[in-house]
Amino acid sequence: MIHIDEVTSTLSVFATLKYRLRQLIEPDFGLLDHLLSLQVLTLEQVADVRSERTVYRRNHALLDLLTAEKCDNFLDALQRTGQQHILNFITQNGG
Image 1 (cartoon, helix red, strand yellow):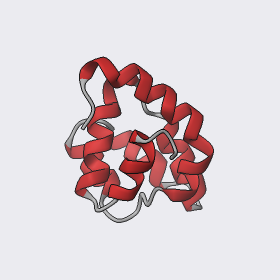
Image 2 (cartoon, one colour):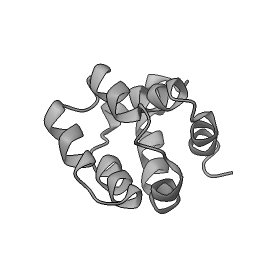
Image 3 (cartoon, rainbow, N blue to C red):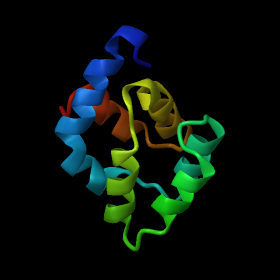
Image 4 (cartoon, rainbow, N blue to C red):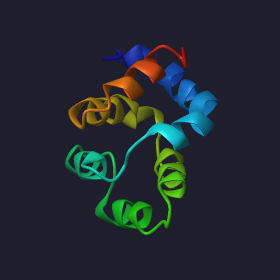
């Protein structure tokens, strides 16, 4: 997991990798529920993300909601939902 002093740089990594992350993240099998339980997203935000028609658009909407304060919990939710490969992709800056 990343440390608090790395959060801002992690947000910039999200911005850099956003196009690829839209294609890789799986939002539909527990991720949004974990983000809700971790208070990364509100119920309204989860509903808005779920209302998007395609996975690509759901991920786009989801990534647009991330702030520096939410990055650590987002990475935790990825790990909890079996998306360790996405977590590795982010923490290795796409490498």
